[in-house]
Length: 264
Ligand SMILES: Nc1ncnc2c1ncn2[C@@H]1O[C@H](COP(=O)(O)OP(=O)(O)OP(=O)(O)O)[C@@H](O)[C@H]1O
Image (tube, rainbow, N blue to C red; front, top):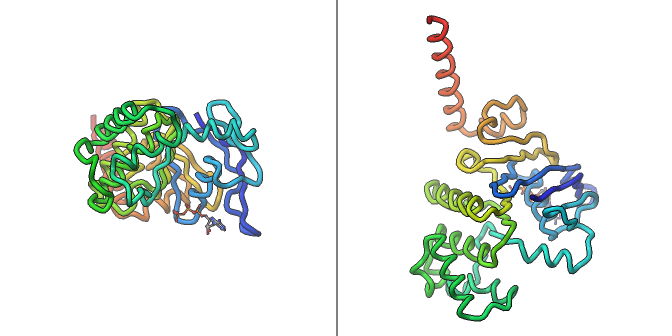
């Protein structure tokens, strides 16, 4: 479980995060949702320690991260897997070498064990026959899969994904979302996904935190998001025509059910 407490961050006189607190649960895909520029990526960077918050703290499974001693922060960092928006694969390395890279850097595993782990992770993401391929030979979806395999290779406890399905077609995007959610549940990882994609919310939003102008103004699950009465969240959700149609169908079904109950 990751807990954040009263996170504030400004750049000059621009306030980006304004006192955000919350809990990201273990074994769940926790979504950080919000429109462009609301501070999602800055919050993610504060959590992983790439940006230091001005005020506030982050705790990983009860251990303070922010402002703690370097060795303790390094130990937590070793448990973090990151999936970047662009996949960020090393172009000059094969698929296998990309996935092996964090094991070489972060562990003293012998070569044969490393290769077992690489093969296991590639198989888990559905890329068992792609070891020797170069990133330039891969589709966008395959690159994301390699990125996921690389993130989980060192047995991460925490997984951070910054807009993991950006640039993918809708079907591939859903597959990547599902893969992240499956791996999260299977290995009991605490996963945080930054997104502004309502499809992701519907597919994998077990726990959602909605940010608006640097504040958390709503949290809940995909099951209750359509019934929210928070105006800013409603505006965000129903800017999408498909979501407006889904809501209309839901209301019509409820009305029909009500009518039939009244008749009985
Ligand atoms: N290093 C920085 N220096 C100054 N301003 C920054 C810095 N990083 C982010 N910002 C500003 O903070 C605000 C929030 O940015 P952030 O990237 O967190 O938004 P976001 O919600 O992730 O948006 P998007 O969905 O478009 O990625 C933006 O106005 C951005 O310009």
